[in-house]
Every structure is written in C-alpha cells, then in structure tokens.
Picture 1: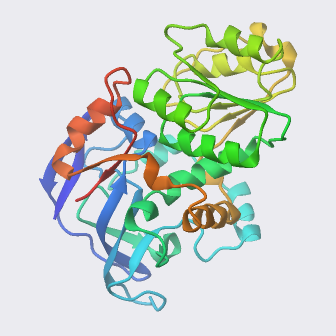
Picture 2: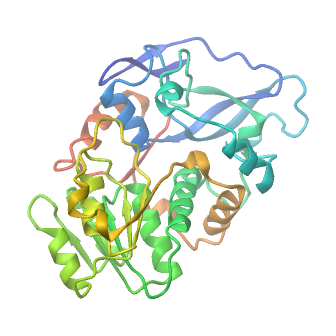
Picture 3: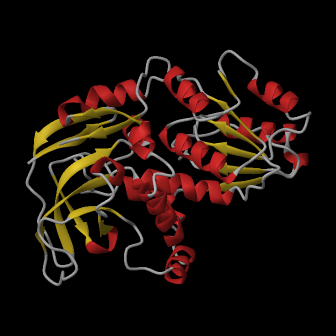
Amino acid sequence: MKAAVYTEKGVLEIKDVPKPQVHPGQLLVRVTYCGICGTDLHNYSYGIPSQGAILGHEWCGIVEAIGDCVEEFSVGDRVMYYKHAGFDVAGSEVRTRNLRPNPRAIYSAPGRMGAFAEYFAVNTSQAERIPDNVSDKAAASLEPLVAGVHAVRLGKLKPSDTVAFIGTGPIALYMIERVKQIGVKAVYAAEICPVRAAKAKELGVEKVFDPEKEDFISEIVERTGGRGPDVVYECAAGGHTLNQACTLVANNGRIVCLAVYQGPVTIEPLDWYMRQPEIKFTTNGDSLPADWETSLKLIQTRAIDVEEIISHVITLEEIQDTFLSLLDPRRNTMLRVLAQP
C-alpha cells in the first residue's frame, strides 16, 4: 500500500509499505480522509517520531476486514476515530488518573502506524460507526472538535467573562465557535497567519491582533478596562506564548494550554506570578466520553459546521509540501487540511 512515511526530521516520503495485518479485536480500515493535526506538524518539525513511522490520527474510513473476536462491526461499515468507544465516564476517569503518559515516548514509539496511508489497523475500542447524518469529512474532524470542546470546558466560562486566544489554528477556530455558543462578554485573539486571522474575525472575534506588529497584550488589557481577559486559551505552543498568556490574563484568571510544547519555553514569573493565574495543560488524552458525545451532537445538529474550517483536501503526494506550507504562518493560505489517500 501507499503511505506517507517519516524518514527524518522534516521529511515525509511516499513509499510502498506492507498492508497492516489485522489482529484479534482489530479492524482493517481503508482510509477515506485523515486530517493534518498541529501535533503531526510539531512532531515532524522537531524530529520526534521514530524513523519509518506513519503519522495521522484524525481519520475516517471503511472497514475492509475484521479480526477474530470482532462482532460489533462488519465489512463495509463507515467508521471514524472515537477514543472512548466502549468506556463509561467513571472508567475513563480511573484510567486517566492511574496513568503517567509521556507524549515524547508515545510519539516516538518504534513501529507507530497512523492513517496517512491507504490502510490502517485500529482496535475496535477506538472506532465507532459514522452516523448516517455525518459526512466523511465531518467524521474526520470529530477528534479535533473534541479537543476544542474539552479545552473550552476546562476554562469554566461564565457569561461575564472576557476571553482571549493566542493562536487561531483549526482547533482554536472550533473553540471560538464553541465559546460564542456558550456566550461570553467578548473574545479577542492574536494570530500571525492572515488567513486564520480573517477566519477568526469572521467567526465573531471582536479584534484579532498581529502579535509581530502589535502589542496585543497592552491592547487587550486596555479593552478590558485594565483587567485583562478572565480566560486565555493558549493554542500556539511557541517558545514565549505561555509567558504571554500569563502576562495577559486577569488576576486569578484561568489559562488553558491546549497546544503541545515540543521545545523549551521561556517564562518570566516575576512579571505575573502575583496575579496567581490558574494554569491548566491539557490534550485530547484527558478528554472524557461526554466531550466526544457532545462534539458528535454538535456535528449532527450542525451547531458547529466543522466542514466550514476545511479549506483543502490533498493527496498523499502533496503532503510534504503541505506540511512545509502549514509551518510557515506568514505564507500559509490553508486552514484545516484533509489528506485523501
């Protein structure tokens, strides 16, 4: 089969590799779409994966074969990634508390096989049938929507809150829609990429600042009456963006860091520690079943139109150039990108 194989830092090559073997309790899925996640981009650019790995986890596809002991799926089923299939809320919480996951070890595990390929083998515990009223493109966007819904929930928003986003990539754009649905006093953002900034403005952000050209911290503090925003969602994972979030947030405010920091970060607590911000680092790894259920309902009811954020569908042959483009925010013209093997 054809796959985009990670060969070295910053390089994906299209290669012919063996089709995955389907083991007991697994499905062999013919991939329909797989979204490009910011984590894929960061792992690729920082050299985290092991040589020969296949990236890609925001997938949907069609069941090609089923392993032994599989009764709940059939060949031909449309399926999507659904992390909490078969687990209840309590079970998920217990598993989360008892684990000490190390993302670097997870992402660099030898033999890691993702869905930037024609076929993908997955455990049934991480797959779910796609409802008839959900398109394939929307199904491939469920996982990033869950990440956004989960992160928004952790912000503990109130209608009187003012919110700021640092970075408005695809997940942050979903979060902006969710925040506007919940209802807050005002939303501001800082974004370098012009196309993402324009989309954030279209989704209802009061003012989007260019952090390389504007002092967005002073501007937002002034617009909030000298307080700063009650909640800051840090979605950029730059070397200094965590410190910016801490400098920006109001006294006793809340910072939710959704982006994955791959390299060292610089913080200067003397500038902000007396404001006693609450800082929460999160990923989709600690999402709950309710986040998945809520997100699927948002897609089914079109309360959030996840396809609106999809700007490009590419072939595997285009994936290397696409990764390079997405990592150049000034020149990037894409929002959410799906690969179609």
